[in-house]
Image (cartoon, rainbow, N blue to C red):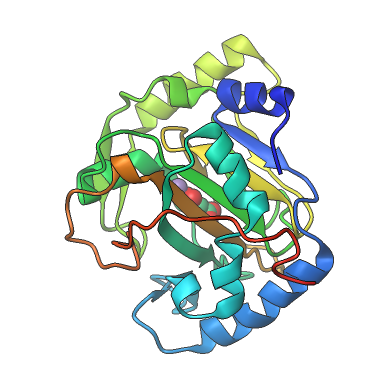
Length: 264
Ligand code: SIN
Ligand code: MN
């Protein structure tokens, strides 16, 4: 699957791109059935929320389940990533961010490269984050918020937040967020911040420097989102402090499978 020139332009302009209907209901149902079992496991790569003890993020899934092993090689994820970056990509990180009904906690304003660079020594902001919604994502159950165009200003200061949530993250100062939102509003007053919502199976691609976050989930609806990060092999990690499930060391190039690899 290839992105159209219009989609490529939108991605370049905004730093993110929503792809409605990327995966079918049947494909999502298969992944959801595997998710239940994976979340129930006692596993070092299941990280729980600070307050509720419910799973916040379940990582390393392609090494734990064969459906996710196929999903990380799915052409509807890998081919657009190759088109945008290069054919030589490795699997950096694979997870489901769960954000359970009533208790799912926020992800602070951040851009992923701050963490990839500071913690893993990734040289350049070339990784792509590829999401698939496994639940309906609405304005109420903790959707991702993006600041359109914020990827064009990658110099925003970041600081290491080890307190707010159970997941240490390099986050962006509020004053930088304020500036970036004002800048986005000056370009398009209707889009100072955009929330990424949609039906199960919706896809989402975003750049390593686009500023994003998501609020807590106080709704009665779960909000699970699958995330695959692919990075060019010639831009691989140079620090190895974080565990493998946060940044995999297997730098083999990911080759796409057939389009019907999940449900044939
Ligand atoms: C979220 O799951 O809401 C945040 C995901 C991300 O920061 O990539
Ligand atoms: Mn992120």
